[in-house]
Amino acid sequence: QVQLVESGGGLVQAGGSLRLSCVASGRTVSIYAMGWFRQAPGKEREFVSGIRWSGEHTYYADSVKGRFTISKENGKNTVYLQMNSLKPEDTAVYYCAKARGQIARTGSYEYDYWGQGTQVTVSS
Image (cartoon, rainbow, N blue to C red; front, side):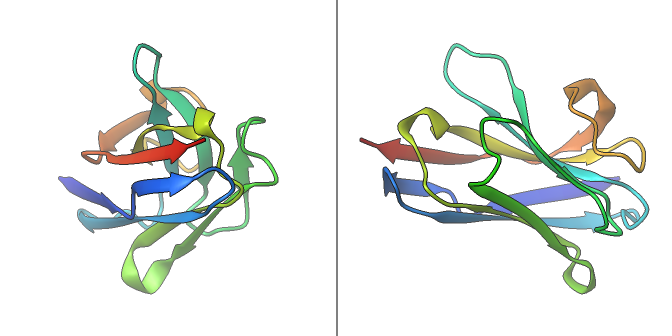
């Protein structure tokens, strides 16, 4: 079993920043990729960013490239998502997820453990 706990969401004005954290515990996750997804009301869950646990490869959705940065801290089993220049369309529940393999793919079916989500609201 793997437990994922997100934190760091909140309400921010457009142009502002937030940093999300995801702490992984339980079964060893060090050989797996991790990802961030988000889901806005009435929309499907979408891939935001991913990272190989070794950290040498990162991936971003086109909508967040240049604004969001994913990183990890192995010693703390923690993955971060730094979100800058936030826009109202970034408003969603953000989920951390553990990949089934070593590559952070974009499909949600490629992930087998999910956190409970953290709400991010960006006001205009």
